[in-house]
Amino acid sequence: MFSPVTGKSVIVTGGSKGIGRGIAKVFAREGANVAIASRGEEAGKVASDEISSACGGTAYHVPCDVSDWESVKSMAETVAARSGGIDVLCANAGAFPQTKIVDMEPSEWDQVLATNLKSAFLCVKACIPFFERAGKGRVVLTSSITGPVTGFPGWSHYGASKSGQLGFLKTAAMELSRYGTTINAVMPGNIYTEGLQDLGEDYLKTMAASIPLKRLGDVEDIGHAALFFASDEASYITGQQIVVDGGQIIPESLEAIDEI
Image (cartoon, rainbow, N blue to C red; front, top):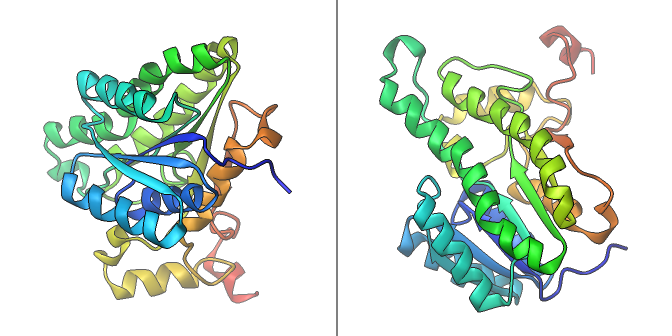
């Protein structure tokens, strides 16, 4: 049985929907004080109210543009003032518009890297003073199998940002160690979210068929992995990543799936 996170101050960026919402829900259910940081105030408030009601924990919304330093710094200060510090940062915010390189405007590339990669740096930087004050902390990045392990047409910018997170992770693990803080990453495969719904039923069926466990993941599957990295029991794990994909990256061909 893992040590409880009851009463701990947790930030989940991009927590108003998708994987972020699943992470927020898992932590709130375990009794943490969860700050959902997102740009959409209405969506953030709806998510925090629903999570608080359903889980019996505490979730609240803090407006934040994760690609803007002043906004991120203000968000961290607001959370620390309200919850007495910051114990866990789940840097989850991400965007994944699907555009092939030939059609992509440079501005779209910049926007995706700012939302997915630059934001991880900004959020970690903003939380360091509070980790230093407490003498400990936990950071969990939401990376992906797309980029570090696999590729998919239209997601060159997304894949680059997710690979970049893992590069950031290694050096950050060394630099954060002086504050007693660990940093690790969860690498989701195909998780059933609002974003995947938009790709259509045929895509969902095809992807599920290519996964050994024969289903897409649930957002809470990622939340549980993040909860482990945030636990006391994971205190000696840092600079690492864990793939949560139902075995998606294992088969070497579709024929291998047919043999299951």
